[in-house]
Amino acid sequence: MSGKHTRVVIVGGGQAGGRLAQLLARDTDAAVTLVSEEPHPPYERPPLSKGVLLGTRGFESCLIWTEDDPAWRAVDLRLGVAAERIDRAARRIRLADGSELAYDHLVLATGSRLRTLTVPGSGLANVHLLRSYDQALALAGNFASGKRLVVVGGGFIGLEIAASARHRGLKTTVVEASDRLLARVVPERIARLLAQRHEAEGVALRMSAMVERFISNGRGAVKAAELSTGETLPCDVAVVGVGVAANTELAAAVGLDVDVGIRVDSALRTSDPAISAIGDVATFFHPLYDRHVRVEAWQNAEDHARVVAARLRHEAAVADSVPYFWSDQYDLSLQIVGLPHLGSSVVERCRDDGAAIHFHLDPAGRIVGATGLGTAGSIGRDIRLTQVLIAQRAHPGRAVLQDPDGRLKSLLAGDLPVPPPPSAAASSRSLPGAI
Image 1 (cartoon, rainbow, N blue to C red):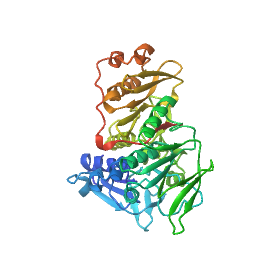
Image 2 (cartoon, rainbow, N blue to C red; image 1 turned 45 degrees about the vertical axis):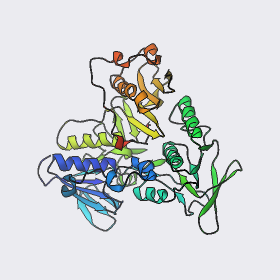
Image 3 (tube, rainbow, N blue to C red; image 1 turned 60 degrees about the vertical axis):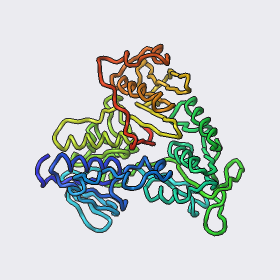
Image 4 (tube, rainbow, N blue to C red; image 1 turned 90 degrees about the vertical axis):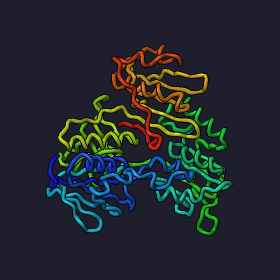
């Protein structure tokens, strides 16, 4: 890419959009505009359910761009305004404030939105959602020792909130519609170990139950949650975390291919070559798995930003990295690599310290994913080695996988470097997924 006449418009100020704007500001001379509905500059979302709720992270520490980053000067930020319509023929985008932006290349990084719970009382005061920094601040303001919290949803976001709440001294109950935690995303044994830890920390679990209504205290705030089991849980605060949906409406309205997310190729190009889609909203062709996948994860957003930045510099680049995710709860780290749900069999590696890794193999014995739970030190290296094995399309012997002392590095083809551990500031709570 060359010349200031190259106009790149990025819609979405989350991890993917914010990082792409930064990379373009550093490495190109393009004219970059970033449009975001939020009033804030791009910031990290993973700290919201941990550091922000615990009061150990402020907004400045969540920003994607450091104070001296050239992006502050080079990127035209359009904050607090939504993108309403794309004119593909004219290569223009209309914003909610009536202004229009011309582009040579448009990048849709519109992310995902929270699913809501449409039950009576869901609009009461102190019934919270958690997706933005402002929502995290509002929730943190209600985190006082001794208060009673009901978390609706036993997924990653709900469990991270529960762990933070117990650290702050709240009496916490998690209500989950399935018969176990993380039913769609981790093996049963891993889920059971995690449930045991939450219960040991004082979290009450209500499985196979749904909230049917929130009950008002008569002054517009919640005082209890009524469950489908007939139980009524008194609460001063409630948080709803029942999943997300991709924001595909802008793309669908102008005829771009949409399939759960915005459908793109391995270089993240949509059906319109002047438009890319990245991050949570993109359903992209993954050459390692030979299929389209949609991955909701911090690392995926980072990888997508790098791919599009390289492509706009006229460099060859595809999104082929092994999906990676982790969630920190108490001193435990839950780490997932690859796409475990594509596996048809599991090999367990259990350690004396209680750590466990499940390796997921397809019918041909190829390793396609791994799920680990333990301290970061006890599972981190094996998980990172497994990333390399997945990238190499390895068919490892089950005996080595199962042996807690088995050296995974001995299975690698060639002397390849082990991926470094992720940044502590960038923990992710999203889930690798595919369609």
